[in-house]
Image 1 (tube, rainbow, N blue to C red):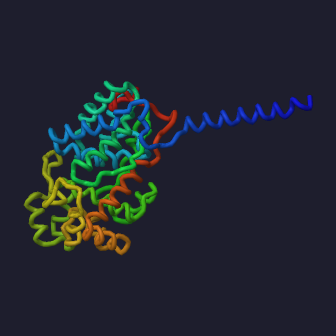
Image 2: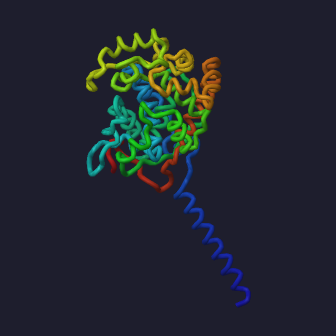
Image 3: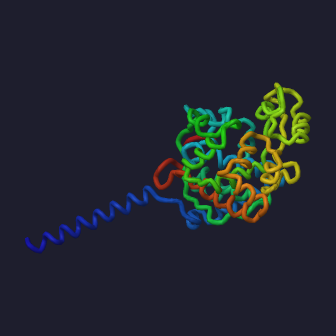
Length: 327
């Protein structure tokens, strides 16, 4: 009996280790090349599809970048953004914060290619992250290494939280910095992520308040006149495609032209002007305007941080067969 007791304790200890190991597996973390065994061609398939779609519909690359932001800022990088209204789900795409977002239908082309190769294996959340990475390359931005995978998909959407969590076009710089800080993204990386505006555009409904009834004095006067030509009415039709691009010189390139423009008071939104003048962010703006390599370095870091926001992993969520609907 005296000998049996240590063996019982040893067996109990081994059982605890096994249970702990199972717990860790069920609540895993993101990792590099997660699909190396289950779907070795997954990342290459996504890259090929992103390239093909870009050459057919160039603006898809911009959409993939915006998708990453809208998905990850709202609770988790879990592809909740891609869900359509069906089966008790209310789509986040219905929110006014999603105004102007498009090309969701092309996600299905990427997902179908993956399902053909590896059924029920690659998550829609990883498609969001990897398509953004590859879209940035198509936009002549940095090739971002170290994008981890292993995300799983949500079983619901968070429509009720979108307007609280996604910054509004009129939000102050302090509010935006606070939003990113809550995600673990520092000021320097936040300034870099806002450089995505380099390939963005703003619909007239979101900028006419700076033009009518009087022109915002912080705007460059000649630029303000250009904007009034783009947006000739103080009450534009929200259903009309009336907009101005943030960057007229390299509108489809992720580069530092955005920072040069806002330093010259040629930003479209109030936050653009604040970014260039606020003491917390102005030094980073000046450095990025002067050094495109530095901007790309910090932009890459920001994208990595954003893409790892509170992911579902392990046995959480699911792997959707169709990104538009829960299984």
